[in-house]
Length: 174
Length: 402
Image 1: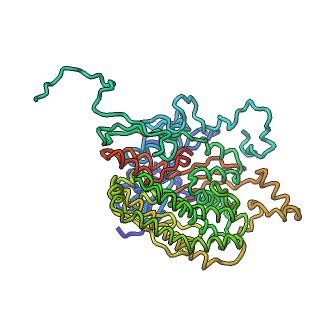
Image 2: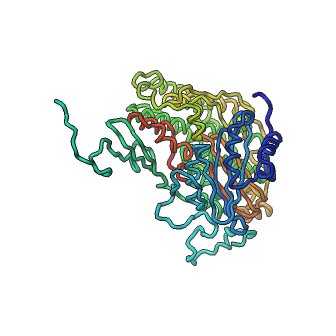
Image 3: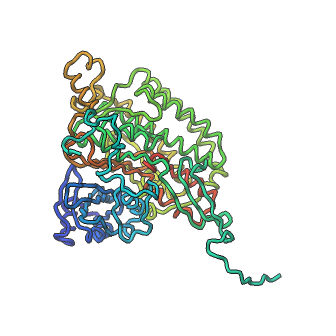
């Protein structure tokens, strides 16, 4: 139990078990980031949680990111934490086509509302979720408001030109 | 007399069912915020429940994608508004991590003082409200004068009281002045006596203990449901972001992480109580060790220059203009930073695409995550215990709904 686990070891362990399904380990700003696919994410979370040595027993966060310009338009990001070794790992799943991903509720119960929130704002469907409905927005809402195609303000307004106020991201052109 | 079985078939949605449906909220005084719980009660015991939230959702994450970084700070104020300085600092530190700005020691220590004051004021509110919900209104009205004293210090430091917008990316907007230090010393001198009195009122009070030694939680349950902060520590898990991943020089200070054993309402109350004493210790140490030096980083691209320089110095004027207009490009990258907020791990997940605003900003709001466990926790408990348990979980509607 007292073996020291660091990011190198975590990557090694995952590599043994999952091989090419978990790709491109990076460490932006000191947090190990791994990419995987929608079929491997739940077994991966389960493996990291139940592994005697690593014990990533805590799910910190689930959220989604929308990339309208990419082929894989949505990315679901998981942050998990091992209290035992004080390590945080970020797992990313890029979703192409209709955004669907299996639910993590069976691994971490806290995923329940996090996934509802992600669904509410991005329309990512978590398959097998016990109660996948809107959580912060009204039930009658038909859009998923955090997607990039929805502007922040009413775009029929003519009294404001966002270009003048640095609110438009020049590099993003939208 | 033997009761005969009756041959009446109840429709499942008939009013005559063995349980009663009760609405608590959305504007019930016991919820201390705008959210709704619909509970099924059998007599006084809760059979099941369902929470509805989102009544004050204000789309902060969407707004943050369209605003320069410094304009996001006032949004973080309105998450956990009982301890907004912690949110502000957490946000500044996230941006500083992204930009790679090193904040000088003095600013870090001053930030620690502000954050610990905010933690005290947060815990004062939560603990005294537990008193209110058990029928002890006196303590609540009495300790609010100490929260007032803390707000006076904030006012001296940044001009605002509740939604503080305190500090800047890169440090603080100004150094503490003489009056702030004086008020801080007065607070450190007088507050322990006042808080001791509050403790005497409740800590070993038989009625209070009978009411609060209810709704226990186990560490396994708490970890599964993503508890952090005092609620997690009350179950006996010593997870505190200040110690696990120290930020703003918390590693320089000597303090303890109080933990509970049963994870019940009383433990949550006591953990907060003890944390107040530890926070006082941290503030004392920070004041004693306070280094001399600048109160902000030397990062003219990101740190708003002082007004007198703007009027007299060309570079400062240019940077002032660029920063205020949000015309500074941030580097590309993604960063997660978390701080120990008043009620748990407050995390900021920031993705920058090299533009002037965040490409994506996600707030990990502690009470949003652990509040989902509430209906599970109170199953089989008395309704009156559930009310006290709810206030002991320190749920802040602003943070819940973002």
